[in-house]
Image 1 (spheres, chains in turn purple, red):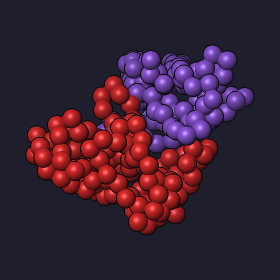
Image 2 (spheres, helix red, strand yellow):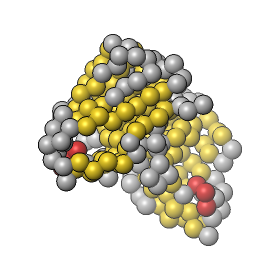
Image 3 (cartoon, each protein chain N blue to C red):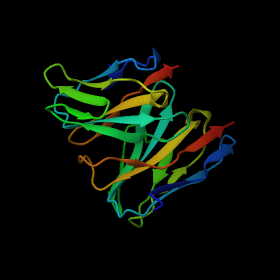
Image 4 (cartoon, each protein chain N blue to C red):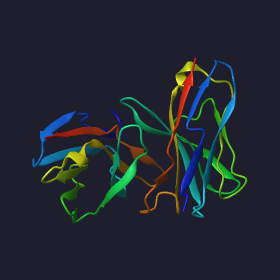
Length: 108
Length: 114
């Protein structure tokens, strides 16, 4: 079993839709969590951190469920510009693990 | 503000050749790392460094060497290129290891081994 797992997708949604991704992790001692966005043939860029109490940044909401060991990303009112691959990142005591990414395509 | 600079952006090598991928950051970050990204595999850590003069192996270190003689530079050397090393390579830096500070990535190097 991979240490960090994501549904690879692709998720194809219409503009304005709400879409959610999950990311599960196996190390219960993991400490910090992030979502990164990666556009085609570009480098990953930080989208948002994930806090224990959940956090929101505009149309994006991130949540952490330590009991079930997953984090989630919710995107409301999807825009064409949201089309990208979304990577979850899980940081433990001595390592940082990336998920393989979930690909999202928002269509007109 | 350059951030993390990687060179070259593209490279084609023959099996057995050696080469060095360059990475430099101007943010005075302590932590630097090299990843490779392959389809369906996500980013995998090759080597990392927590400061000048200190390096350590990541998840997939075989076939690669690194050095960190200065805070700014963290080159990755392929000793004898193999087709299995065809990948996209990203260098990243952050203020400290495993902190809540985000990683800053370079643009990537697309490497093909024939």
